[in-house]
Amino acid sequence: MTEQARLYEVWVYLQAEPLFWLTLTIGAYLVADKLYQSSGLFPLLNPVALSIVFVSLCLTGFGVEYERYFNGAKFIHFLLGPATVALAIPIYQRWDTVLRAKSAILISISLGAVIAITITYLLAMMVGLDEVTTKSLLPRNVTAPIAMGISEIIGGIPSLTAIVTVVTGIIGAAVGSFVLDMARVKNMAARGFAFGLASHGIGTARALAKNRQAGVFAAVAMGLSGIVTAMLIPFGFYLLSDVF
Image (cartoon, rainbow, N blue to C red; front, side, top):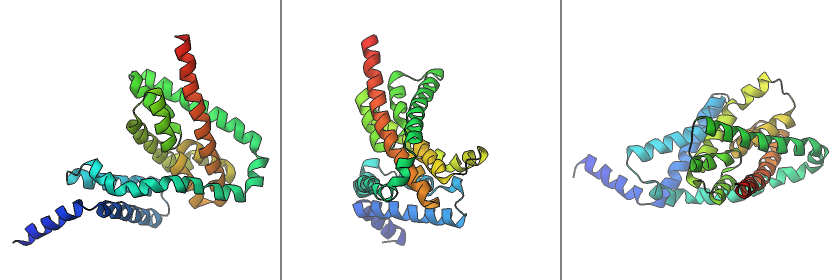
């Protein structure tokens, strides 16, 4: 047996092992994070975006179906829930600081959710998207698990919603600092809140990496935005269905 044939057999064996895809995912992120750190936290080298590209190229290049990949990577997917809940710890530690800004938080969350939904809807109408695609895009401003649930309730495509939501988070995390610098927003609480509101989980992770206070307010924004949006969109469709 040739060396090439032996390597092929090893590859076929590894593809059948769920642990391989888990290892590939973690390895891709570690490499991407190393590049990100080496670049001085350059926003366009976001480790989440880089690892997605790397894993996607591997799956496409070797003709691996997503279902086979997810069979191994689902362990990471399961940990998304506990990781999100764990954000309550830094919020609890700075609860007094959060309460002092409660009025600004409530106003910002309400306006931010309404504006995000409205802009998404208007853009979808401008480019002529069909009803199902539009419904899939509307919840893009909240974290993926909540966005997928909203999408399913209103008749969208949850898988499409997940992709758009992740892309939204990556773009927001990549350009957020530039936009906030241009707007001369210096307050770390305000910067973190903006990241959590516009870029949900990915933005919150970036805010936590930059500053503890920014991370706390990003987590608050991500959580409250999900709650408000989960009420606004289904209720809005319920009212519209009654009118028409």
